[in-house]
Length: 278
Ligand SMILES: NC(=O)c1ccc[n+]([C@@H]2O[C@H](COP(=O)([O-])OP(=O)(O)OC[C@H]3O[C@@H](n4cnc5c(N)ncnc54)[C@H](OP(=O)(O)O)[C@@H]3O)[C@@H](O)[C@H]2O)c1
Image 1 (cartoon, rainbow, N blue to C red):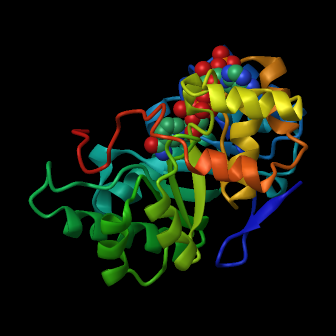
Image 2 (cartoon, protein in one colour):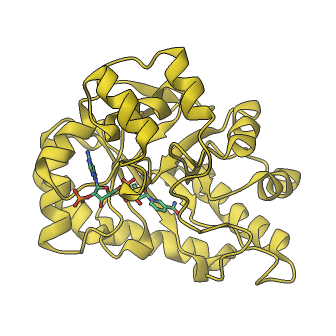
């Protein structure tokens, strides 16, 4: 299993299983259980996905020792702030039914469009994240959807540099400025929607590169991210795809990488962290 080492030494599996849109109950439980039976050891959930209970059940049923798993969850936006983040964390822990979380993330930065002092609010949320980390309730802490301006503000007051930044990342939406900033600060980037939630899979350039390597376009997206040192979190409720997404086993050539780097914007979700109203 390939892992990325976070700046505090914690090893994080490079391929995680995304769970957004997997409904609490049978759908999420079955998908996570199947993923764990098929080599995944890293599960990405969030309070707002409302499926932490099913993720927890699948983990327990798997019988896999807790220390072999890497579980991520996230504090949702209305719970920003010091006391409410600490409370939200305990609620997630209880729904998951685990003693600790491997990675806890701020799901979205507060932005200035919604908050007069977004910087102070993000700093307060981060103070709670640091508290959880220092108490040993989480093995690593990080952020999600933080652009360079949010990271710069956060680092002004942080005593712990985030270990991870989870951002939208797929061919056609590479957010290079943010990735470069993270690389300079030893923050590992995780790709959400690494398949562009399906929106990039018909792209003619990606189809052409896939044909050349005799793999699917999805595999091109996933391998591209991995070759850039970026963790991938593909989601699927389909057993064959769950297996396929973990089985990427080929190398892209430099000319493929250059071509993907030059793609025009394609498949952007439309969710810009400075613009969103949630
Ligand atoms: N931090 C954030 O703000 C944020 C935002 C979005 C997502 N995320 C995380 O990132 C994870 C992944 O992102 P995502 O769920 O948005 O999108 P994604 O993983 O890029 O795409 C998932 C979609 O692609 C389909 N799919 C999966 N594997 C495929 C394959 N091999 N070939 C063709 N289609 C395939 C899935 O369909 P089926 O399920 O029907 O197979 C599903 O519709 C999420 O689940 C979540 O954990 C985080």
